[in-house]
Length: 361
Image 1: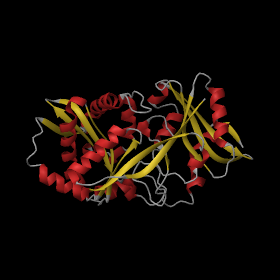
Image 2 (image 1 turned 90 degrees about the vertical axis):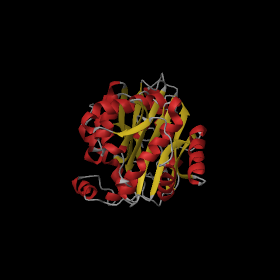
Image 3 (image 1 turned 135 degrees about the vertical axis):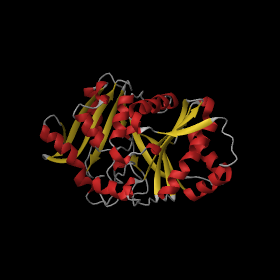
Image 4 (image 1 turned 90 degrees about the horizontal axis):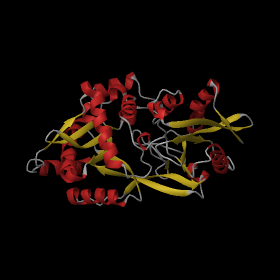
């Protein structure tokens, strides 16, 4: 088994195609985040301005059996990421081979993180349970054997939470008419002022998550690129802003489970958009993030939760899945559980587990 840097165009195409043989046996697989690696490896992404990205093929007797990319982002000093990892089962010594290559290529770095794909906003982690289910939109599905490749490395787990929206609707109907939000209002993303509103999201993102594990400062251009990969599937109501006296103080990001529009490993296209525009009824939605500046946390969060409910009801959503949250981020997990217990009288347990893997270099 050898690692070959994908420097020529044919190797790059092999890099993008490498996942097909991995996922062929798994009908529950759904594609996630496929546009971003191509933009990065073509060098057109604004992320490339501050990161080194080296794609590799994993070869066995000249046959492609996997792929990954080393990413060294100057905004995460000392860290080498092993991103976009895909591999067939049974490749011996793979983790050690990757680690040794990272040490040689990046002698000034002291930490390897496997399963972080450039930035947390691009997704992270290998699945640890619920392999029998198709994932909610934009959450990775990976085969059960991936974690075994990295046994012996430090495992950092992440969780998602899954809940019935009917309890949510009942809660909103009960408290919505009487709650005093102390002047906080909510508005949706203005698609006619897209860049300016995305910059607001980016600024709040950086302010609220700067202490989060693996967080790196974002630019508006990077987040604009990320949102644009959704094309016409992104609607204004998918990004809600909480305002106090006109100042943005929080946001909520969500999407319906667009995977429900797909069959197998299809990617979103015009036929799926037509289904959406013609009133497709979704079972679930993906709750990405909710965050607020500390001084406005409680009321801003409450206002955003209330504001999302009419959109979810109009789509027919019966379930929602939120996260991922790092398992060692206890304040966030405790806050989530406390809200559901107080508001919905529901004891919430983690639903889906994922993990990234760390080692020294």
